[in-house]
Length: 360
Ligand code: COI
Image (cartoon, rainbow, N blue to C red; front, side, top):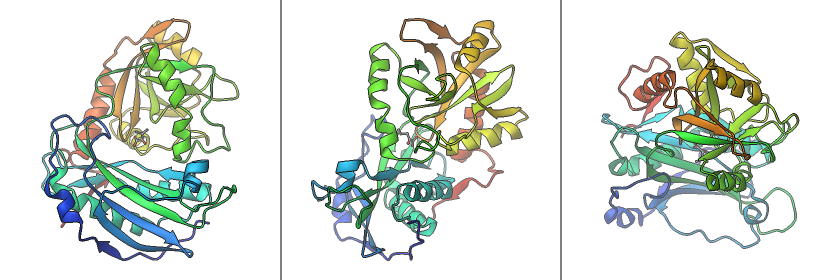
């Protein structure tokens, strides 16, 4: 569909103050576990987005036959509001999330939410959650916008009704410390021409069983290879991938099956500005493992909104073979992470125009 909607009215529901009255930030946040008890909701019916509502977080009432429940007809985003050392909260490149949500929606024939509508919803949630944005470095308000098809119809096809929601979760980085990563050589995540380059919930569901098998063998995550040759690195389940080889930064090229990560793009631009050579190409896992063995590749890392930049300390195979990295904490990794987080958290000059303050 992909039509551009009119900007819906924003209605602030009367229940919002009582919803927030007793809410306090717990000392342990984790990632995505704590929800501020408010939400933005906007329903789509009769071909238009209706009024948007900022109100109390409450259970949804949808038909058991809703398309989202039958066919996973859903797209989502993840972005963060930071308040570390800042007076006003700031978002990081939110227009990129708005544009990607629109591409994801278009890919599965959903009505798009315009960038203006997305920004109105996200900013309204950030403003009402201002007092609950954690302020320690590494913490933020993780925002989860999503659109789902709600029509009650078991037939396979687009939905006539949709709901756009924004949730807010005071959170920490998803994976603290370093990660051990299992090379997933048996299963595949997505194919070129499939939906890997947009953000559908179903792409992530496809990785859950592999992640469990990885966890059972002492790994934090799996890394996916291309489905055709089973040799080229794609991404982790929810994070893009970088390797530092001979002091250069290498990352899988965007060939249509991996997510064009906003953190990935920021790292490419930052690293280039910091004087690193950045190479976007197909990366053969076996060549990389040999380079890890020879010391040519001393550090690798994963990145994403939830992960920020997380060093990978070891790769492993199902058969028990392990490939430890010479720099498990990553020296260049730490330098890049410091530069990125300093912009996100407002400590460094933002020469890229990425920070988006939310005023008022
Ligand atoms: C994000 O980084 O925002 C993601 O979408 C990853 C998610 C699986 C937690």
